[in-house]
Length: 242
Image (cartoon, rainbow, N blue to C red; front, side, top):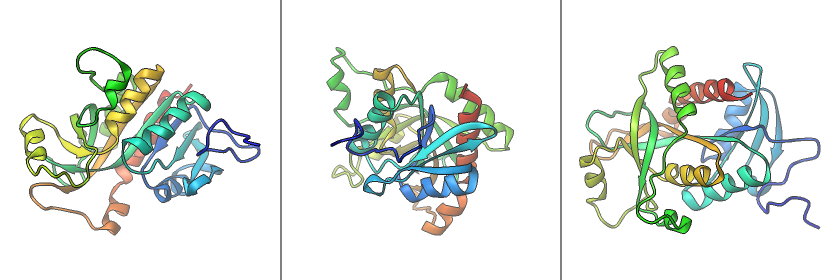
């Protein structure tokens, strides 16, 4: 008999999910955040090896769980967290490819909004083009937190693509010409899901590579370079959790 309303998240006995949750794509990054930043982390989910933990940061309860790659995987978890587990805010933490000339590897990008080539927004039935945007409360606190730790956050629009390898080689150039900071695969889906649920969401990234210059971090460098983003996300979570 199914003991959870979700086929992908099943709380272990005696565990729960905090009102605010950080979501990297890689479940091992969720494990890293839990073990290196949270106090007394407890594993609440390991269905499909999508590890999820709840602990405390600066005295506030925070959860972290992997999401997988792309909008379909991310929004599956986001929808269930919002609707089945009473989560109020999701902060996406991940990597992205820089596309604008003034964006470089290791830069912290905070997505105010997200353009996308996905047709997901059409499901909501709004005539015209739906604009997926972040929650202002989270955005404001993230910028403040970043500045406090000496980071230089780049705030603007990102391009959420359903393709990691797009057949049209000019897509990223078009996005660059229209002022997008970076290309990634989840933010628009998160924002749409949060908007429809009446919940809060924010996506932030550290740039792992640049689409046009070829500048890139190794896998090991990515692991060692994303502390800035993790700290900003956790500070934001703590400050916006009641």
